Every structure is written in structure tokens, then in C-alpha cells.
Length: 169
Image (cartoon, rainbow, N blue to C red; front, side, top):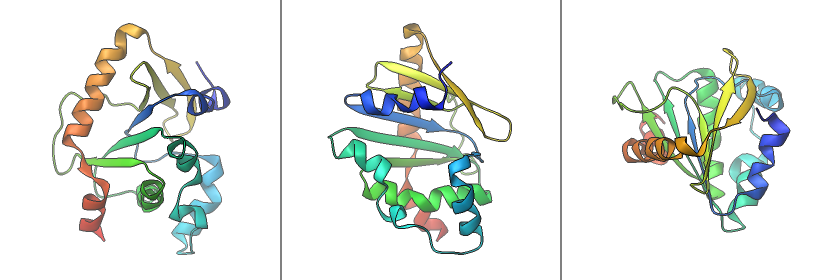
């Protein structure tokens, strides 16, 4: 199992594309706590919200970054916070889609997060019940086709983020 630092290095070494499936309604990220509290208090968000530098470090090198977030409305406070940051990720070049299970059923998707790198390696993400990252497990090559299929199902059913968000604003 890879810890956060080991897993983070994968974002420096993938060559072409990274895809994420997100499934949690809350992620407990220590580095986000102060910003999350400021968001809940209605305070302005930092400048990187306009153009996410982490995403930009990848897309400026010609790499593709995409995700589909599977959620169930109504949105939790955390999801309102996370989704409010997505326009800056999109400005930085990330492609984001949303599947709202309150609006459509999508059979065949896993109930856990994963990252798929270069269509060659898949990492299942593990979290505590409260959403704190525990680690990532590189899955066996035999599982790759399953996760490519999950990605394809997610992308086929996802609504573009801007379309989803505009309906809620």
C-alpha cells in the first residue's frame, strides 16, 4: 500500500493521462481544513481557486487530467466546497464530469475511488469512514480492463461539470 507521499510521486511520473473516479461525499484533507472553514464562513477563496496550480503543473506539460465525481444530491457542505473549486481546475485544463445518483442510476460503477494512469496502471484509493486518506493499492494488471471499463461507463454517463453546476447556481 502506498502512502500519500509515495502516491503523490505518481503525478510526476505519468506520461499522458490520469483519470480519477471520486465517490465520497466528504474527504478529510488536513491541508484543506482552514480553507474549508473559511468557505463555510463565506470568506473569499485564495487566488489558486481561479487556476489550480497543481493541475496546471501537469497540463502545461501536455498531460491530460480528468475526473468524474459520483455523488448524490443534496450536496454536503464539503461537496459544495469541493465543487466550488472545480472551475479553477477546469481553467487549468482538467476535464470534470458529474454523475448525480439522485438524477440517474448508473449500474456497473465501483463504490470506491481510483486513479487510472496512462491506461496502464490503476490504483484503488482507501479512506477511513470519515474520508481521511489511508493509502493507495496498485492493482494487478489483470484488473486494468475492469477499471478502464469503469472509466468508460463513468465518462459516458457523466454530465459536464459546467452544465451540472449551472443548474444549481
